[in-house]
Image 1: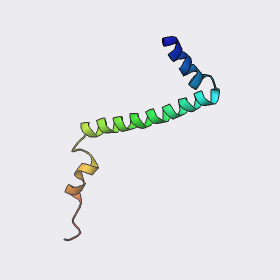
Image 2 (image 1 turned 180 degrees about the vertical axis):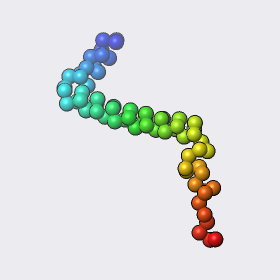
Image 3 (image 1 turned 135 degrees about the horizontal axis):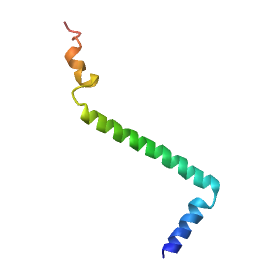
Image 4 (image 1 turned 90 degrees about the vertical axis):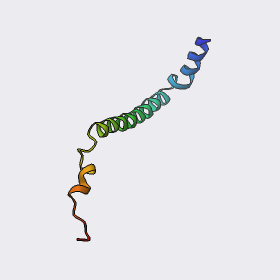
Length: 65
């Protein structure tokens, strides 16, 4: 059973070089986006209240005054 699954993966992905390279590049692009989003989320949660986007309203003057 595992042999047939591996055979299917081989026939669909690894057999042709352009398909294999396409899978590698698309996977790398997707993982880069996921890693960047996760890193930004961790950074923003650790530094909440200390970033310009959080302090902007405190230091910006109102246009009405």
